[in-house]
Every structure is written in C-alpha cells, then in structure tokens.
Image: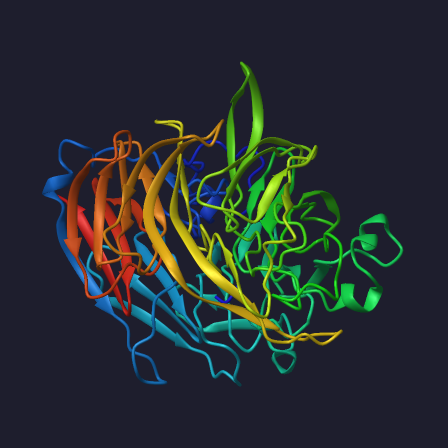
Length: 525
C-alpha cells in the first residue's frame, strides 16, 4: 500500500471518554470529555462516531465557516494534510511530514509550530499524532518517534523506530495504550518486513517489537516457501489500530506481501501479510489472527481500520470486529478469537472463487497478473483504502468509501526470484460511491454514487443522524445517515484529504476537515 490512552473502564462501544478532570494539569485524552477528539479515530473503537447531537438533520443547513488555517513550512510549498486533527481542551493539533501544529480551536490562530530537521525519507503523507497528558507524539519520515510538549511545542525526546536506509519511513498516527506508544512502520515495497512496536510514553525507550512474519519453525512459517522469502515479506503497518481495554487486545491490519505483484516465488498464504492481527499491548505477543487476503498478488493488503462493535448476532450479544477490506470483501469477526461470522463482497470483485471454512476468500489463480495482462476487480487502489470508515450505533450501518473498479494487471519481472513490485496494473474503469451496509450481513442499505471517481475521503457519523465526508469534486458534504439524503455541502480548495471530525466548545458544535494544505472549521452558532 503506497500510499488510546489508558483507562480500564473505557467502554469500547461508546465514544464518550471519562469526564474526569485533573485539578492542575491537562487531562489525558482518555480522561477528556466526549466534546473532545483526542485520538486518531476519536476513541479506541475506530467507529468515528460522535455522541454530539446539537448539530442534526434539522439544523445542519445553518453551519457557518468559523475559520481556516493554511499551513506554511520551512521546506516551502504546500503539503497535503493527511492527518486527522486532534482537539483537546480547546486546542487542535495536526501534522504533515516533519511538522506539527497547535492552533486555537475557536479561532484557528496558530499557537506553535514544530519543525523537525529531517534527514530524508518518503514524504507521501503523515496520518497524525497521539496525545497523553502534556505530550504529543508523531512519527517522522526519517523514522523517529518525536515527543513534544503540548504547551510550548518544544521537543522532549525522540526515539528511532526504523532505518530509512532500508527504505522504511514513518507516516502512521501513534496510538496510546496505557503507558505504551504504539507505532507502525511504512515501507517502500523493497522486500523488507513490516512490524509494530511499543515505546515507553515517558522516555521513548523501546519496549517490544513484533514483526509481521511468523517465527521460523512455527506452523505459520509453512505458509512461505522458505525462511528467506518469509523474512523479506512486506506486511507494512500503515494505519493506526484499535483497542479493546476489556480484552486488552490491540487490533491492526498488515500490508501486502513482497514481491508485490508476481507471487510465483512465494507460494502459500504468506502469513502474516494482508492479515488482521490481535496483540497483547503489554507483551507484543500475538493472540489471534485472521487473513482476509491470502497470498496477496494485487497490492490490496488488509490495513483498513478494524472497527470494534458491540452488537448482536442471531439474538446474542457479541464483541465484534468489522473491516471493509481493500480486496472488495467485508468481514465481521468475533474479536475475542478472530473467528469469521460474515464474509461477503461489498464491491465488484472477480479474483476469488469462493469462501473457505475459515471465512477467507479463495484466490482464483487464473485472475493473477500475466505478461499479456489480466482483467481484475478491484483495481490496485482497491475497493477501499486507508481512508477511515465509520459505524453508527444509531443506524446500525457501517459506512465506507467504496470503489467498483476493473483494471488490467501485468507482470514485467518473470525471474525466478523477482524483487520489488515485479508488475503493476494499468487502465480500466471505476465508479466511486459512499456505501452504507448492515453491519451484521454486509448487505448494502443505501448507496450514493459520485459523478466522478477521483479523490477519496474518510467518514464521520454523529448522534445527530448526520454523516460527513468529502466528494471527488472538492466538497465537504453532510448526509442524513439513515437515508443517504444530502442535507448540506461546502466547497473547498481541494478534495478532503483526511477524515472529518467534530467537537464541542463553549456549547457550540464544530465540524472540521482538511483539504490540501488548509484546515477548515465550521460551527453551528
């Protein structure tokens, strides 16, 4: 793919965080009120659902632009804000590669700017930051985890999280679990393994690292032809994970296997690439795994947000995990053990010839890249991508930016041991939609097709029965989340480049989104 803090009593199924406050210093994100947006997904669950309801279907048309903030950096030129801005105690925090900002959430006035002196690395984007107490954490493209004082914008410490000389780079939003800073790593598909690691939130010291390939000699290692292929496997961890404090499990997806398109030299399922994993955050030990995309040969991975839902299946309460995967399939798992409950396509796909007894799609070897091309759905960008989905307990619907797309996949490296990409896709047809699905079955309840299939955007839902997302034509749009009716829109300078968020200050509810190099805030006065 080229592209939360500790509180045992936090209920993973509800957005509101404890309303406790600290008498002297700022509350930790896990102690902030539900009015804040203190971490990448708003809470541990990944649902991106807010219980704020002052803004609703009856008054969303009265939203007014409150302020805009356009970034400038020491390196010059405009950078895209891919980060989800955080809001804690009246201050918004966001990042781009090498830079972090704090701005007044009421006015958009800059409070401080932090500029990291990068030594190089890939700068395709930065997903955002994490906050614990008085410290903000973010990754740099030259593979450092940096801790910043949120009052002054000054560095407290930094710690290495990888080697940029091996084509690793940092872009993932960290997640705070207890006193662990959970970080993922990105890589440029040059036959290197992915990993997740935990750092001490106070000192930056490395606590553990877990590689996204099996230990040699284990049963899972047999899903690779040999240890050499396995330890150069890929499986990058591109997107922030989710966490269940009751089970004490950290969930995340891993990226595609390497070599990317030509998988002839790596027969087998290739664990733990393109896999949803559950780790114990205290030890880094794997508790369970489920592989949505065995033997990935299309760069589809499985890093899309694993959304945690407490719902019912066949009349019984269940602790669930849902993912709309890049390969075009929707998965609903039991998050206590990783067992599949529902496996069904949510977009056009022709690469799987059925589903096995584990609930995994079965790859059709006829639909793999060839020298003269193979027509395949979805295309390489996927039926979904890193842009965050949303789940609303108000409607029971799971919302995803969905693409129906066909493309022709080619192999251009037919060596016995291909390296890197070894192929790619070209051309084809695509159609973009905002898709709402029943979380239990994956059946589409409503679908809004966009007139073009350009940029994608993440999704926000609220207790006001609203859904906010960007369209491919540089608008932020507000929908009725039950019916899919458009209720409001605002034109921007570029397509929305992250997921919208919401927060409340002084009794007023705000909506925020970034488009290109500009952060926007709207308010209902």
